[in-house]
Length: 325
Image 1: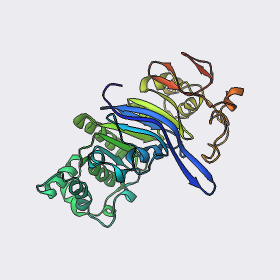
Image 2: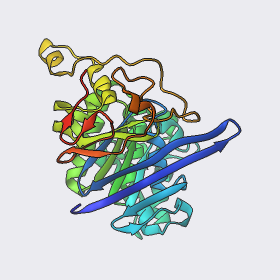
Image 3: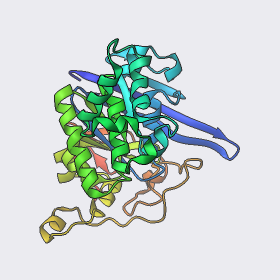
Image 4: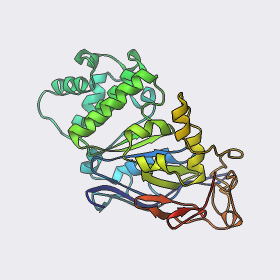
């Protein structure tokens, strides 16, 4: 893929517990190009945050490869070169826990500048500039995280990620804990930074409606595996996987015109199974209303149903979706 910045190939991350092996991420593959936003969407427990933590190096992969700009960077963060640590940053879901409560905002934002030796000048001036970039007053540097609101803390977390001038930022549900007005402000800010700095984003969320206006492409995760990937317009216009249809048909809308654009409602059965006890065959078959005998026997492979539109489902053959909702 041209200008590819990240390529994840057959990534696996298992956790070994007394209850059994948790297959949190199982043979996940995707790529991100420069200045692209890939939206990774799924229910709680689908493995999307584990993908984020493995890509950034917090977790070491059980198997598979992570390529950054063509080089194998599958090692955990402790073994990664500083240049890679600068290039890949992460913004966590809850800034209340990701920002050290015992440090001032100045100390928090100074740390990446010190670690990466990015400025020999006045770090106080650099911190003030970072705060202005995220539309916070410079005198906030003297405050502690607990003195700020949730949205302000998240802006500080974004400023910290920007401090190293990264090329790829992983956004792990960065707006899910915030009210709607602050969500919109942060999303607009992220879009502006992407344009100004030529950033690439891996945007992890459970909010599909958010992806319509933010993502270049959308990938749907279910029980540790990606089941569908498509460019955003195609994804919303022509969903193929029954699970994707279920998610899209569940999006709340206000107008009747919007309701007509949604796929016919797919009603699933039960809850997402435990990753310790993944069902045989297609992992979605226990909830799928259109499953066939083969779905319970064989795990489907990812196929390209149309250009740039990939789906992992036995009921999709070649160019045409056999499944109906």
